[in-house]
Length: 120
Image 1: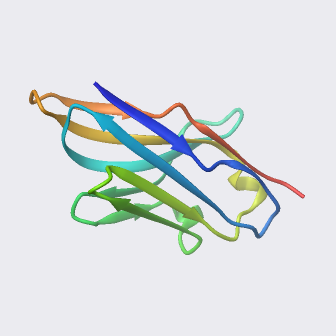
Image 2: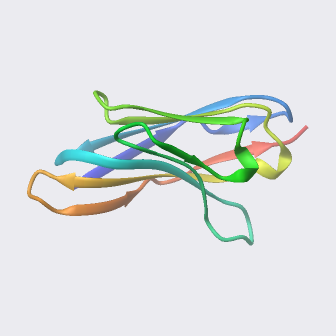
């Protein structure tokens, strides 16, 4: 009932920047939380950043000061601006949203993932 389309991943050199986008569509009444997770090979999926509908944000300690999460409620879209990228940021990045649907369901939906590779 909720579809997520991610974009913006790719290959970047250390110190570079990338911007990820994730657009939600479907039977959406309200999106409570929008966030980004990442999973590196051999590691567990971890929270990178999240933002509530009111604007409160949370970041992993490893990305504080380098990454910025933002959302456009009118477009049901969340962005992740990643600056000063490091090789250890290499991972598949997943969009995640917690949605109240038009028929009063609460859904936790995941995007398909986008690869971010930081390498020289």
